[in-house]
Image (cartoon, rainbow over all chains, first blue to last red):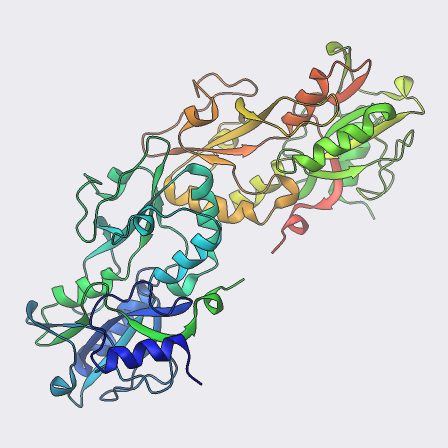
Length: 259
Length: 259
């Protein structure tokens, strides 16, 4: 059966779609990607286990296997994201839309939950999201909160921020608490300075949005954290998705809810 | 079988305990009391139905019946609170520790959930509560938020406020969301001015507590709301418990959790 998720993946795989995946295949889970040599995969897996809010693992591949059967039929991690970034020794080496030529028998793929999933639940719950309304990327910030390290992987927690009115913030905490597999509840609310964020108008990733006088900034652990940590470990090779170009899976956002 | 709740009620009924009920019979639900003539009981019941966060009804008696069998064996609303307040035409008429001599065949008793129940869950969840640590009454404020009126009953929502660090505030929202029968989740967080509170240092009821620079004020709908509304309706007769002198029931706080 052809689903919207499979249709989107086939368009991406064929090269017909090489841009962002936001808004593609609504209702289906999208995942952040990190692909690492098997020699450091156990350390990275422990890193994810120790930092579950930032790194909610949706799937880990067998070494050398480009397939991820638990995420969807026929998914091939080498072709099914619209755009990839290659990092060598921690430096961006190139961007490309297909990594088949780079594939090695020792590569392990990690697919990590993304806030797109809980944003759908927030919007369906009547919570306005300014960056979605304005067609921008969500604002993300490096914090002063350390992650729990594992092997070569360590670094600050990265958070995404959404400005919400207080009653909406409370409802958003309730809604996202139901989604532990895609970052779950916020880790902070109000008081950006308490987590080392000096200027909300200057995010470290994504786009700034205005915060109204009657709103509070609400902060969720972000899937950029494991990417940033993997790059900072200066591995000989690390492959990630390009910003906003995620893997579309066959999982339903609605099935991610724990309650 | 003698339970801590029954023991406390017997001490109160005998006049051996006439003070606050905070800390008595830990683990058992305590309730706010409002006793009104049957002629306005239907309006008050509708008021509670329309304002469930402020007025979570634990029980409503039959007219003229002083017993509340669903709350505990042998409970007699005329003797089982340590101290009562009588209001005539909206003015405080007297305080007493027994209302048997005032009982009438047309009185209806309302018992309304109280934040003591969720405070136990917060403390057990490792959330520090300053007013409990300092042995003070919680700070309460009249807000600019109107309640939904019914008949003669209308007026502002009254809230209780607990200062919490942001991560604790998020956890407190999760915990209290499980307790809809005892006020449930907060109705507001941060930004006191948004709900008409000008000065947190001057509560309208209870005691002020300090708020640290790294803390947010978190506001819950408060059981003082229905009391204040009942008094403001200037009924010929209205009986409430005296502040802090609640009805101890046989219900367990832990059984109030919805999940």
